[in-house]
Amino acid sequence: MAKSPRLAEQPRVVLPGSEKAPVKTDIPHKATPPRSKITVSVILRRKTPLKVNNRVGRTAGPIRVTRAEYKRQHAADPADISLVRAFARDHNLKVEPDPTASARRTVQLTGTASDMQKAFSVELLQKTVGTTEYRVREGSIKIPAALVGPVVAVLGLDNRPQASPHFRLKSTAAQPNITAHAANVSYTPVQVAQAYQFPSKASGAGQTIAIIELGGGYRQADLTAYFKTLNQSAPAITTVAVDGGKNAPTNANSADGEVMLDIEVAAAVAPGAKIAVYFCPNTDQGFIDAITTAIHDTTNKPSVISISWGGPESSWTKQSMTALDAACQSAAALGVTITVAAGDNGSSDGATGDNVDFPASSPHVLACGGTTLEATGATITSETVWNETANNEGATGGGVSVVFPQPTWQASASAPIPKPSTPGRGVPDVSGDADPATGYVIRVDGQTSVIGGTSAVAPLWAGLITVANQQLGLAYGKTLGFLNPTLYAAKTSAGFRDITEGNNGTYSAGPGWDACTGLGSPIATRLIPLLAPSATTPTPSTTPTPPVKKPKKPTKPVKKPVKKSTPPATAKKAAKKATKKTTA
Image 1 (cartoon, rainbow, N blue to C red):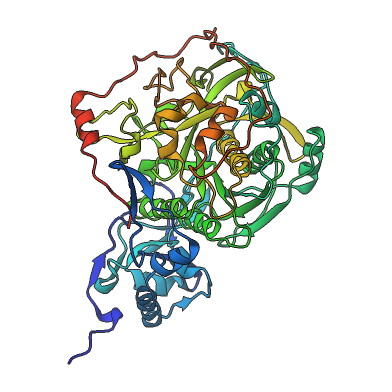
Image 2 (image 1 turned 90 degrees about the vertical axis):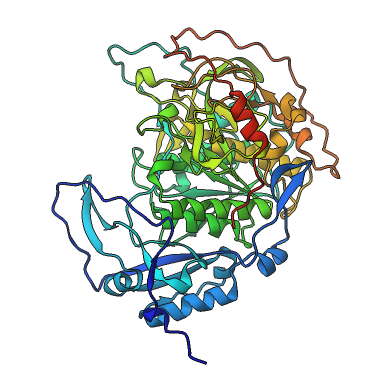
């Protein structure tokens, strides 16, 4: 019997979804130095696809599994890892040692640019984007035919920035032709938590919140000083370096604002929780590797992951989106909740036409939109959709995905469907205070600032879920995990404050779910007991629930009011016929 040819001798096939558009630049480019070292992440399929949980015919995400079961059934297939090792030998590439490679389904290979170009049939160039030179690859990746199927993605050949932080600084300078804000106040995270009625006796003790950062850094002196003003102890923070990322603070105008906002909000509203910050390069490789590292980190054991970075779906390659969504699916199966900022550029998400932000559009995460909040203590006097685009100060992201189909747990939501034949996943799921005009008092690099953006809402909800896990007595591995099907169930509507005024550009708020603020902002003391697993008896809240006042009409003009869309009959039929689907 003849032996099969070496992988290097097999015909080359395009890796599906690896196509990358050319970089538009007038600056002359040059070849990547052939001896420069590059490390790529090869993402592999699961040994066995995760099973889908069906409740009365409605897809409720992947079935929960133990970590032992996951490792045994749903990690990378040893045969596929061996195949990649053989491929590496054939192309003079080194396999990097990693005890979590199988669980993360990620094999990292290191080699020269010259060997990488031959291994993946690509041309690597140095091109200047803006003022920075990056390593760029354009077109498709080609791999031996035997690897198509086992390999889901090859990341790291191109090191251009993939995502942007979703935070907004409050404007302090008076400008001409600027509309007056309906509100011009600020809150500490503790005051925001009080407005949303976070339980006063629960702190998130025994839990860990993971925070993903694609740049920036923090200073311990700032944290110590900040939490002293809140009469809290500074949080216990663990820094995890991924793909060479590190805690690298610079100045208040950098990504440090994102890092400090995330840490200070999450730790202030869940003061008993530990914080683990995963620093990585701002690339699709770094982003995905950081998420999988956090999910499979059995040392720090995060039960919630907060992500405040992203970009329009159109800015991602299909292979990257597939790999990242599959990672989020793994988190759901393992009981890890992921909260993600929905973006700060309204319904366009900063691109042409209507767009939603990814990874917020993944059907396996909790997408967090933004509001303008006016509150005193636990009493909210007004809460509307955050939209300050007239003042060039952003608006909540939201809309309908053109990549991910509408999940069946979202089919009952009155989601606007631009293309009735292809109902998509609606964004966001939930909301919270994000307007910089009603933003959060935050300390960054020795300066106290007011910061908003949906970047604040992701750690706010991460803190709420952490507190809920503790209050419900849920230990690591048994935590709430993938919440979306439960949140969209009719019984939990009492746990939300429905936001019915305002718009984010194309979409308007209205009763029930909408593409501006999702289901609404939390009434935590009502919501947490509704999240309890059937076998769990929730701890009674010690905080009384005051009557909720109706939101006041905003004094500022609303930009381009648009009548809230309702799904046409064809869309409703399509939603009912939604097939059960899971990412392999």
